[in-house]
Length: 318
Length: 318
Image (cartoon, rainbow over all chains, first blue to last red; front, top):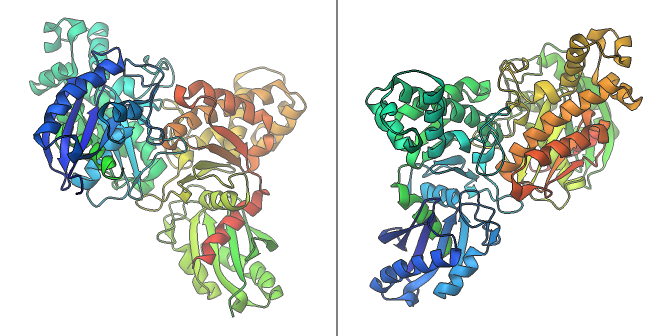
């Protein structure tokens, strides 16, 4: 008998979500563990195992599972390794697919978390029917999945599509988790937005609701909430973030001329607050041939589902 | 009988080179006309016709020609049009493939000149055996042909790969022919190098051989010649140009993770003068996962042949 289920795992810098998916792309059960609390990857896998085996048992045990697909930061499709991920505790090269396959006794494939989200979006979401688009994930970091001619771009070594690490600010840029300065991710991630808030509050005397929060505790969610209440400083932060993103998007378009750029992850919940300055600044910076032609869309999938579904799609190919 | 020849045409901003190519990829005869002197595209085509028909007659006439392949700035593979090319005299949308097909009475295909060069390099040059590389053409402008998984990237609309128009200098950048400011092309093209020379000579008192040339007449060739004689200002100009290119290349690698970036066109003749600062600055700006892994190579084809051969390859598919 054919094995009727696969497992999709979406590893983020903060949380890891996983689910059991059937042949029709239904996420039939789902659970999660913390990523960031584990300094040892083996203990992290133990944690996943404890939670996941419960789900697996509800569908008839491990014999019903064809394989595991994982979307992970700096995940390499070719090798199954997580290599030098700046937003994870585990440094160096982690043979994650092999570790998972050994633990569960079933084959495991792995890719970049943003690539997994892009596959999910292409099959089930806003990119249905598109052959050329770029998925930008705005979470703890900034990730990307690039689709050209209907296929994820992996490049020569499996690591293509690290658009969070193009340089947005060439001189005096912010430190990035990758060890360099000025990366898009240092500005346009959730943590980047919080850093922008601290910068503005510390270098101006403007009134703001954000001054009611201890400055080190401010999150992108706080900035969003303040902006929704009409706070000018908070709105300015989204305009600044959108400008950095829009400028970067114009360069991305010059590379692969996508039909659309699709926004995914925590920050995309800011809606028009972030979308309007992105589109305005992208249009201002586009070459004439692309003005008015490139869509910027929000993901149409529930946040965790896109990456879980996308990762699970890898497992069907095992 | 099968038609045994195709024509490849390489349209540059200054010159247009064309040749008759046989099934084995030999350029069996070749000629050229000026591009920049024609304000009317029809007169330009008349010029090509006069020269090309001589070559065609030496191989037995138009009946022996299967088709024409053209590499042109802003050439669109999908439509056969040249659209809004900043470095050509003809503005707007020029249905160049149709005009050529009508004039010669044989089918004509068209792509970006840099894409054509990349195809030539992949089949006959330094990119033989590579499936992921980027061709950068450093001529009157800066062009690019991006190869992913062994195929040219055309994108949603046929215009992908305009890497000369990513923004290298975000604030107070130089005016570019495209109407924007700060483009890579405004710094790293042959004209960009000449502009750098004028900037340095006008804003410093440093001695330089270049001061013997009327400042408006300085070309990138003059800068090269001076650098070869040990002129410090000229060497500084190549270091500056290489820095701008190396920084841009690090961003390109984050996009498609190529095995190599291949340099082509006039400026690449500067050899180590330009290669060393490119590699040094690319390495300095690469994410850790790519340090020491991406080759920067010079084209192995004679300058005109790569694009003529690449363009001719299009014609076999007609």
